[in-house]
Length: 368
Image (cartoon, rainbow, N blue to C red; front, top):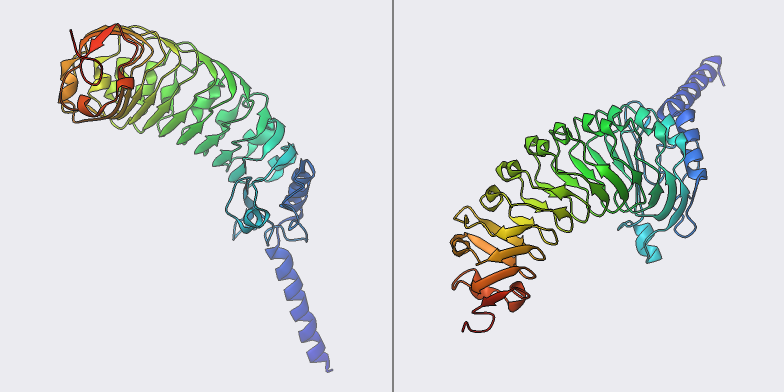
């Protein structure tokens, strides 16, 4: 081999080694992932079997990297998936352990999904709020405990916060309303208590706010009506009291409003019955009085549930002027009088009107 050939070969090998090193993930990211893995135990599917070798950007299950920086950008580990690993096993996943604070060393992390593993416990690492690029935090379906980090509001790029179906306790942090980019908030089925932040309306980009099955008390903040993108609001199965703000009925795109199983009282705002809301559930509260006779062509409900309250008097005749009512439930009240004829009443069953004071007519018995 000539000297020139030797030098050329040496240069080529040097370039290949350098390129391989540059295109691999940094050693710090790899070490953080391995520490994260060490805190978890998944015995059945072998989710972490592929986490070997020096390049965590290449074929590490659930890990994705930024193409330019080669820094870890996404971790997507779901316990319920159509991935071949799950199909081959014929079962969903189960994982125990906790989320290691080492995850916070992945400085370019933009998406963290550790969902539906059923057995992962412990708190959300407080340092998670130091990840400046985090857009998605999805921890649904585990046994996460402790409180939402107090300074969660530092994550100004966060668009999705989903910690539903866990054991999270404590109040909703005041800083949460600083999440100016948040679009999807899901805190369902936890043990969160205290009241909703009075400035909840600062979450101007929010389209879904799902907070059912908690211990949230106090009143519904009027500021919610300032969230002009909000389409789905679920505050059911809590301990809310007081009246419903009339401003909720004036929201342009609010389509679903679930407030059932609370301690709400007073008069239902007329605005709710002539609004964009098509799914309205106010059952199992302490509303009372006459039902507003304010329905009209703008009233369009796939679901209208007013059951288990204390309404009295007749069924409003204007209900028949609604554009559409798919499911109507007025049962378990103190309503009295003849059930109006024609749509929507002609397609409803007796259960829609059962357990009232003295309703009569189809589909109940004839009026005397």
